[in-house]
Image 1 (spheres, rainbow, N blue to C red):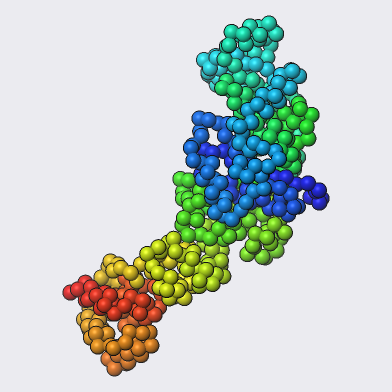
Image 2 (image 1 turned 180 degrees about the vertical axis):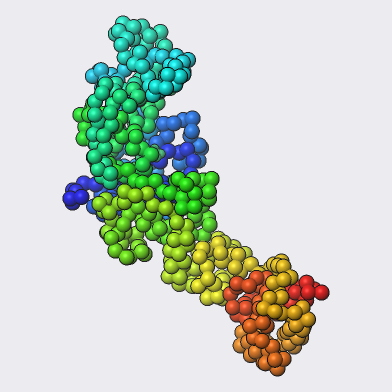
Amino acid sequence: MDNPTLVRTRIAPSPTGELHIGGLRTLLYDYALARKYKGQFILRIEDTDQKRFIPGSQERIMQVIKDYNLSWDEGPDIGGSYGPYIQTERLDIYKKYIQILLNKGLAYYCFCTQERLNNLREEQRSQKKLPKYDQHCLHLSKEEIQKNLDSKVSYTIRMVIPKNETVVFEDLIRGKIKFNTNDIDDQVLIKSNGIPTYHFAVVVDDQLMNITHVLRAEEWLSSTPKHVLLYKYFGWDMPKTAHLTVLLDPDHKGKMSKRHGSVHARIFLENGYLPEAVLNFLMLLGWNPGTEQEIFTLSDFVKQFSIEKLNKKAPAFDRKKLDYINGVYIRQKTDSELVELLKPFIPEVSFEILMQIIPLIKERITTLKDAANLTKFLFEDVSYDKTLLLQKNITPELAHDMLNKTKELILNLKTFDFLTLQTNLLDQIKSNNWNTGQFFMVFRVAICGSVSTPPVVDCLPIIGKEATLRKINLAIDLLN
Ligand code: GLU
């Protein structure tokens, strides 16, 4: 792409639910394009589908974008020179523009009842024809139209689709795309409730908001010929448009769906992924930097982003890669930064204790949520299977002996710090001629309730003497 002088991109979510992780990727790319060319990134709410409207959804979508530390330059909350930014607040605008098409004969009133449309569709289906409006109302006389309007017959307004023409448009990712107009229905532009459909509102708004580039999801590709025609009807230039690939589910055929795990942008944060790690992961899902570099800050990405590097091939949403990237970001944090991040996940633990825990787990956690699971045993007794105590050829008698002697040892300790514990435990192993690996296996399970844990002796001062003794007693009881 040559250096454009003006770049205005937008994200146009519908308040029909949560922001999808794929929607966040689209947003990120639109955001990067605007930022790269020092343009504007706009948030517009497309709420014309009142049937699917979910109260609170708009606020949640806006909040989750902020939670990912992204921002917009114009939008419903902050306004801008091209507002309003909510489509149902723009109905007068659409009225004005539909009138232009009506006057030009490029849109027409349709008074067909739902019943007639249903019958038509049934008939076409039975004849194995493409379900399409038959243009019945396109041929109504001026008088008939006026009579219907005067007697307040319910109507929609449809766009005229010419017969057997080729609509061509240049997708920035996919190249030239051609459609035959015979495959396109006379799309309803204004519904019977006076509210526009997506197709009409999106074209009018992108034009009036001076949007220069549209990067949107592949699912809108088939709608594009209608938009191309609408731009032509108005005599407007269409924004440069690219349709991003879908995200594939690596474990199941087809695209990612909520049937197989989380797909909402918010869930990833709730599950302990860092916003910058998720964004970094999304950067690589459809955009190829052309180098081996994998870790990108947002400003790196903005600098390097270009439409030419967007992939044609749909990427797989590889959660293992996301885990890896999240781990990298977690380990880049200082201990005190991590404390702040962990707070919501382990709310009952104090700052001081968290500072002690972090060095023990920092290298081991993939998500912030892991920290809660990994440290649960520090604050409560966790249940586990007796067989865990008896691995590495350890007999019940040996485990018993190890635990009983350790209990005595700890009971007699005057101080309960790491060094005292470590020295005394190692002395005890030596004087009893135990195998070090075997001892720590039994001891680790008794204290932590599992085999993969932070270094067990480091954990003891955090657990405290009393709770340590209680855990040993519980393990002894389990063996009995
Ligand atoms: N409102 C559409 C959506 O929910 C926007 C599609 C577009 O970007 O044109 O995704």
